[in-house]
Image (cartoon, rainbow, N blue to C red; front, side):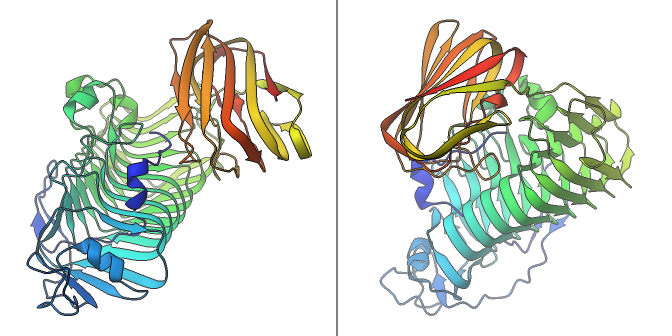
Length: 499
């Protein structure tokens, strides 16, 4: 689980709303019934634009007989409120909606047998970036290196009735995680009635400690994950991280520990759940089935965000090692205002129905601030371990540590709406770390102001962190929560020096 970076190669391929539907029975590995039948009727589709494997991109695309050859050409031509019909056949391309702000929904619809095949060489099947009102339906999506679907910085999008499998083997994300469906930093997203299975990293990455997720979401708002099947993914089934007002209902998530134990992956015991909730607030998990995972339901507070409003009720949770696995809240069990569990049918747990570890995975550190801003037009104050700055120009920021021992450090350099809003220009940033007087350099990609730099140590004493900006950085607000250092064993104060 990680805050997702925006690979520059993917800025032309981010996907926000996709709806995909197959009309045949699919035998899902690990599912005893073998009956995963989507209900889309097998009838010829009608659309405003058509794409065919026998088409021609110089044609008008207005009829089946004058279809275009590529989905990319149809996406380029489509107008607000129109639909694209992709006829039966295999298409090896990355479908890209890039900065398309439609007033009415644009539908990308796959006819029965329409397949997006990455051939284990292309990165992402359907990508929507910074776009609104898009729906994708009716596709089998397979063989993409990072994910079958990626929607980021979107609103009013939906992915429905897709068969999404065998994606994410060699992800380009910094975390190296691989996904079936991936949605981040978006609002009003619907992920519904998809069949998602056997997505995640290749065996060599799993052996290195990397896992994936069938349906991965990060920082979603006012969104729904409904009636999907997520099985036998190499990692977790469903992740809701830093979400706000997200409903998860009617899903089946099973068998999501897959190959990890066989490859001695050290993370499988806390990753491979039917669903994993971390951060955010007001998450509703109802009437789902979570069977035969390491944990049916993981609930954690890894970054000391103090989430609240988790409601987990009326779910079937059977045959897992743990029914619930709860950790990071500094108490067992969390207060009911944080986690409410009722009406769940927990059976056949091989270890325990509820496992709770009260270890606090993040420990706040007191902060003191020194220094001034160049050309400052505002004030800087300290509150809750964060440094907030009014408008000014920033060239260098240094944090020094006094006897702080850390195993893992999260440097939230820009922040996000979930972790502290910052508005900046696009200046390059480099981060220098001193650990036990050993110097480390980390380059932070300014193309994605949402991503935290994560540095894992062997438990040494942390001396200093210095941020250097290639150009003077225009700062409107700076929320710098160095208190979000994880696994701190001992510590006193941090001093920020601004130049």
